[in-house]
Image 1 (cartoon, rainbow, N blue to C red):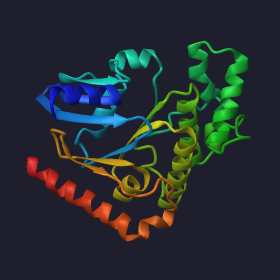
Image 2 (tube, rainbow, N blue to C red; image 1 turned 90 degrees about the vertical axis):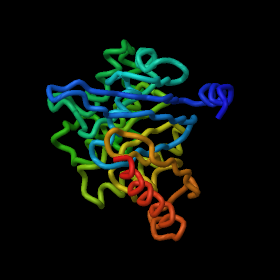
Image 3 (tube, helix red, strand yellow; image 1 turned 90 degrees about the horizontal axis):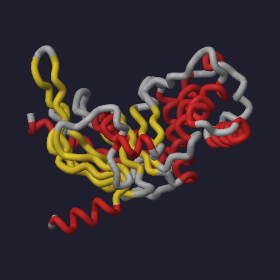
Amino acid sequence: MTQQAAADSSLSSVISARDLDLTFQTNDGPVQALSSVNLEVGKGDFVSFIGPSGCGKTTFLRVMADLEHPTGGSVTINGVSPENARKARAYGYVFQAAGLYPWRTIGGNIRLPLEIMGYSKTEQSERVARVLELVELAGFEKKYPWQLSGGMQQRASIARALAFDADILLMDEPFGALDEIVRDHLNEQLLALWARTQKTICFVTHSIPEAVYLSTRIVVMSPRPGRIADVIESPLPRERPLDIRDTPEFLEVAHRVREGLRAGHAYD
């Protein structure tokens, strides 16, 4: 790619990583978590990151969110640094655990970032009601987290990330601790939510079926230091019933992901 083409691609991307490196300094010496990562994420994409434990998937997401800082290269969000994107409230972040405060109601948990941001009480109430409807938790505003199932708590966490209506949603393996039946249901709900909101989603997972089912693009990462082994464009339609996972097209993409994971070990 020429320098001009790279610049044009970066300008059209919501998220752009250029020669990204990140090395942690530890008591045992430096640990390189990411090496020469280059990626463009377009508006409205659903991009999943998959790879073995310790390959830098979550670290990459945290760099986007300004929770970690690269030691080389760059990342931009909407054309600005992660720090400026954070200050502009450009993204919502969903962690592996729901992270709800047990002493606050579901509505109170969702309202918390809105309170910090200075929204009026009227607008807080309107936004809480809207996002609870989006994640199919209308009527649960006055419940406490311990009164909800694990899957419902994760939906509340997603609602909290949606409350200030950022265009980008960063999701760090939010369904990993849930059983398969609940996970399938939440995958369906997340696709429906994405279709309604048209947000750009970056999603970390260890599950090949989950990555293939959810994504428009799948980024396969190699073992540490994390590099991109393959970027797979999904041929699947955006409307995807669960039984699409039994089709030859789905299985072909899943096979390519597995091959990419195997090939990634060649970097060791």
